[in-house]
Image (cartoon, rainbow, N blue to C red; front, side, top):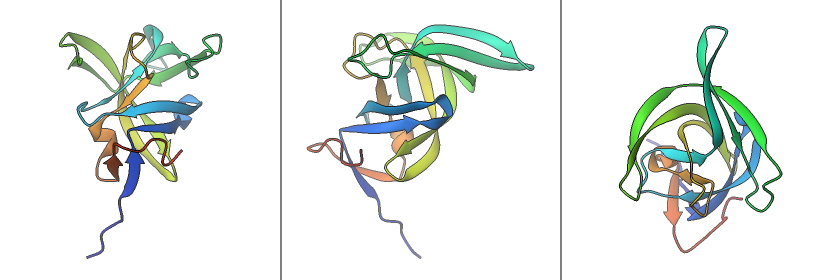
Length: 143
């Protein structure tokens, strides 16, 4: 039996979400979070060709809030999520591709307001899966 070598990642990385046309977004790698979460604004549920969708805006560059990207994606699920401060909320969940280094795979992302957080996205343990090992003393290893 062959075992695939796991890739080392740091506590911070830069990813791409190609389905959403988002490149070079900095994420906080967080094994305490089950699902990844993304800071978005103006979340609107709608139907398109019979599919239930969600439309949202995000600012991929925290240093340039004038740069805004509008996205839409099918709603994969709606979940009750408890945040790190202990409050729970219903969140839309989308399924989308993520690229980190040379790896490309589908992940689930919850959409929420993370405006009071330092990073626009948390990269949770379901996204990390069995692909990576985390070295918390490093950052941007695969960026």
